[in-house]
Image 1: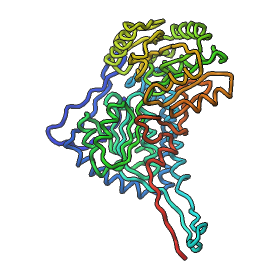
Image 2 (image 1 turned 30 degrees about the horizontal axis):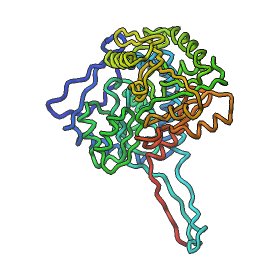
Image 3 (image 1 turned 30 degrees about the vertical axis):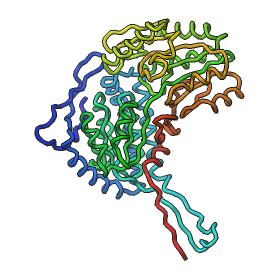
Image 4 (image 1 turned 90 degrees about the vertical axis):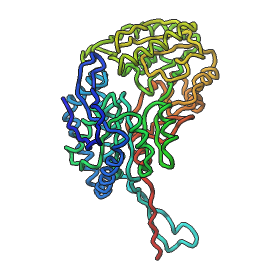
Length: 471
């Protein structure tokens, strides 16, 4: 299928169209027109008009549009899922789950549009203000630049667009160059649900275009999901504007010997290899108490070896391709480096094009990139620990952290460890990649800026306005 194109006229000479390809077999899916930095004023002119339209919509109208869009996405769920498979390489089962989540994200956004207007302020609770009454409302920021990644090409767009529209903002959306058609599918659906076309301006282009948009003073907020290097560049270029960034992680899981080992194995296999490991909260390092290490290691490696890698449209496939052959080559090189430094591959470490088989390593040096940085790939590192303090210290070694997890039958220990883990979320007796779309979601330590999760993103995308009546 091809999405309706809602492109701006481009300045001459136009950039050549981007060809979008299937990461599994490299077949051509479609093309999208490219904008350049010279098009920024035209983009902003449309966005200004979009903000005028958006702020004029009543909260009820915003609710109705988002609610209708949620229902339309449910009706078109299989179409959306198949597009995700073709464009992003997720397995069909994983793609269907992403669509269900995006449907919920839009539904939550619809509710936010009419349930979070502000609140009363008790002015008369303070001496000298006995005759004053008032309230604050939550008002839109204005024009929001949303930059989204490829790994959740539908739901992460919904997480930025939904709250922004609920709040009455306009959006300039720059989706990943690798998955632009899925983003356009969602915007077309919103327009079918009644959204005025000018409220969301979809643009496609390279880093020069992104930088030019980030630098526009009139843009009130940049909401970005992606890597640290790009996030740092955005922060340097943005100037005085609101920033919300989700910059990835290196999710550690701590497994204590008293845990249900079989349940921990199943949860960690899912958490590590979902979406071919291209998951910002995917399990990457598993720290196992030494007297349970061999038992966990052997079961985890054996369970991983049973996973089927291949055609993402096959219902039996567990792990589809990575987003590109280059991405698979990168992780293959990282694993080679870890093995050269003394690591040992227990299973996997096999590549064919963009397919990289689920890989489990042990004895990886803590100086290796696979230990310290985000792999964003179907690779897991196992390591034993002797004490609780040692486990927590190793889990906290990275300078950024989204989610961690711990498995234990000891509730007191679970609470104690969760307090000491430096991260945005702790999952107890669950995989690190557990998330629902209503919870606050974001990182800790370096690069932590703002939170997603519909209600929390809505607050980031609004500003309080106080009204006080004297008399």
